[in-house]
Length: 88
Image 1 (cartoon, one colour):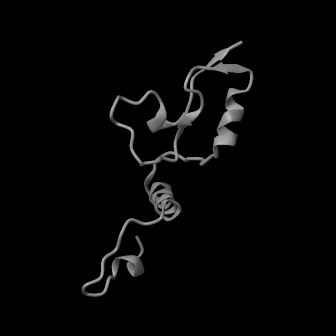
Image 2 (cartoon, helix red, strand yellow):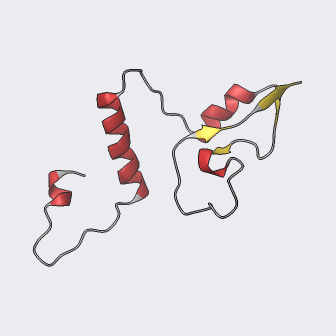
């Protein structure tokens, strides 16, 4: 959060930030602290890596959707994609 976002007036409350804002803040932190360079990709960009393969169920999904344990489904959404593809 920026200083403006954390400087609440007395008696006011700050709720969760919109997902896009939170994601941008997380990406900024990672960019400053990661020892490896990261490249952020959309689902469509990641899907290109699996061209010519047959995707194993559940396909290309967010990491929390990859075979989740029963009862662990939640509203959280990561920006990480995962899949397993078998060569044809």
